[in-house]
Image 1 (cartoon, helix red, strand yellow):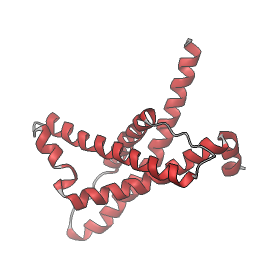
Image 2 (spheres, rainbow, N blue to C red):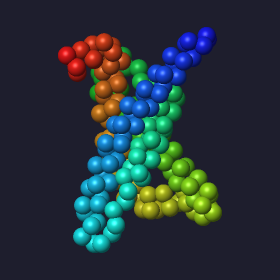
Image 3 (cartoon, helix red, strand yellow):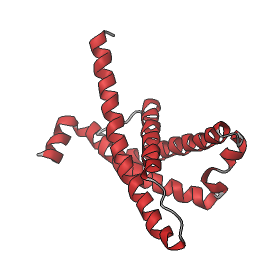
Amino acid sequence: MNNLDMHSKFGAELKKIFILFIYFAIWFSALSFLSYSILRHDGIPYAPLSFALIKAFLCAKFMLMGQALYPIESRRDKPLIGQILLRSIVYLGVVILLSSLESGLDGWIHHRGFISSLANFGNGDPIHILALSLIYWLIVLPYLTFMSLQSVIGSPEMKKIFWG
């Protein structure tokens, strides 16, 4: 692979992570604002948007890792909904797994112990983890739908449909 191809591929990867970062940043900022609007009556201070932005960057990175392991390539000869739903569950699993490992590593870095921090992922509450999973799935689903459609009809046609 020559130097120009590497720069082109690096530029394409930067563009992907930037787009995913913006997409997730909008979602996580909105969720952060919603949490603030609910908790402010109890006197709980506002969590800075920087946490939402860090989470958006990490999720964008996790999604790109998931795409490297399980690329988004949809087939015209099969129903798109089945392809998207299966893929969304796989990507959700990757995001949840990596988020839990992130929680464990964060605990290890801050001397709280990897295993105990891993066990504390989602506050250690299965209902909370299920709720997080549902929210993550609802966030990932439109992105995967868009990417699957783009895979089937092509990037130029998608640009024409969305931007005229």
